[in-house]
Length: 133
Image 1 (cartoon, rainbow, N blue to C red):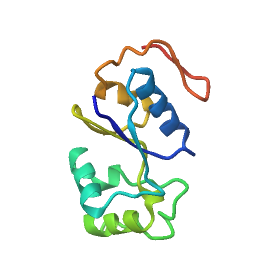
Image 2: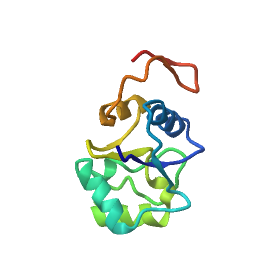
Image 3: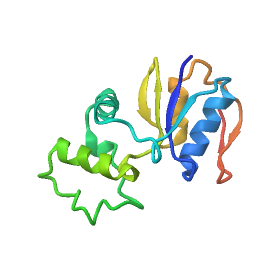
Image 4: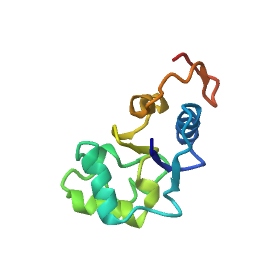
């Protein structure tokens, strides 16, 4: 199974998601989107595959979201995508792509529904939370 993860190695949720994918027996394609952001077309494809709600994929915490006035409900989808392309940190993570679908995996356990082998056994997240699967 081909799996792609749009990953931020500084994010615990992203690291946990990557670890779950690997525990399923698959080595995914890892795209560190802060250094290799998706193209506009690819970002739109990802958003559309997740239901088309750009606000559901935009990250507020630890980003210039407030400073850029992105909470303004009058901003268009294109304006929000422009901001995400200019500031990739605004793209929430991790986004996982498989033949089963595309998901923003927050919490990390959401990735399990995208895996061929979701029975990865007992998993301990970095923060010590145990996920019994």
